[in-house]
Image 1 (spheres, rainbow, N blue to C red):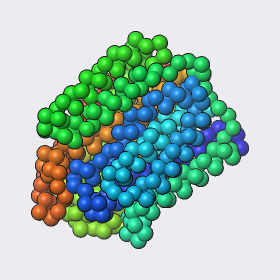
Image 2: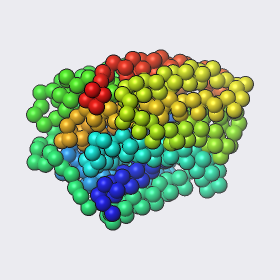
Image 3: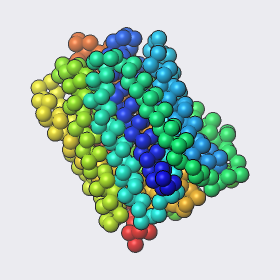
Image 4: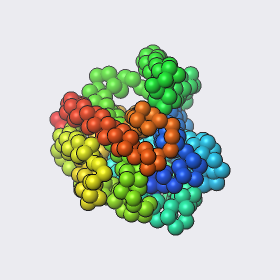
Length: 456
């Protein structure tokens, strides 16, 4: 097997595993909350702790991959992620579970940036859209199977079985790496690693998210303010560092890279929490069991999995910004419809709305990734992939941050019981209205990126 084929198989297998886990866990959240008596805010941290850790460490590990080898960091990530999955499965308490999920996120950070970087390292630009489309399709296949499989596992074997399955998937990916992937890529070997910048970046993101969960109290204001100030200091410091973990020069004078990353950040901030909110809605308000709720939620990622390879090929022929912007416009319509979901909304309508969101997201993701990776030189592939991955994870984290903030203001730190359903629905509607507004901004960011070299 050639290194090209091996890199595609290994990267796609890992790209399937992590979203499979995330979407499976979303279905299990009401059951997890019931077992550990977790309130609404704590329950949202089951998802957020993973995203926060992944976002905090993705850029540093992307930089380490460029210095020490992408395959090496990728392999270590699979080991950490699989081991942490076992820890989650044996969690004795909600606090332990959230902590183990954070360790999982660190392993995920090693996987996310390096997998795509390995792909673009071995495939020429003329085939990049096709292989990225396949990789994104693997992501959406994981998202598609996750709700259904997660629902079945939760209902018949318990929520802990989800993480045992993920551990087995991680072990299979490791075998694929050791058996078939022989090449290594480290174009920045010998350069220094910015440890101080890494610490500043990680602490700032953590403070920002902890602040979100504590708002509107003073501790929340202080923590959020400290996080934002720390991030501003980090970006300023990175612009002056000889070997930064975030190459800010990639943003300066490169509008395609800058605006495509901005569009990804806003897009994920607007869309990620949709599944989280609708999973709770379907099980709490519509009264569906985990299995049937999972079947409903399959509609969105299934459309993504089917259409992503086509969108990737299309972006090899049509300007990626056009395809991605059309996808974002469709997403605006879907999110606006989500804001109208209430007690009497038929489940069929929820399925149609999710399918519409899936079409929009598929048209956005592959072309946008193609635009980002096609706008930088080969030596920056890992950092570019890690930067895009950071935008994705930070957007997902901010999406959950909006939910945490809305839950804290509408529900408070109490469990979601039938008496709290009106407050839950009100908060869900507010969140979807915020997401619709963000999605409109993403359309303009996508259009503003300009033309890539391939467009010209």
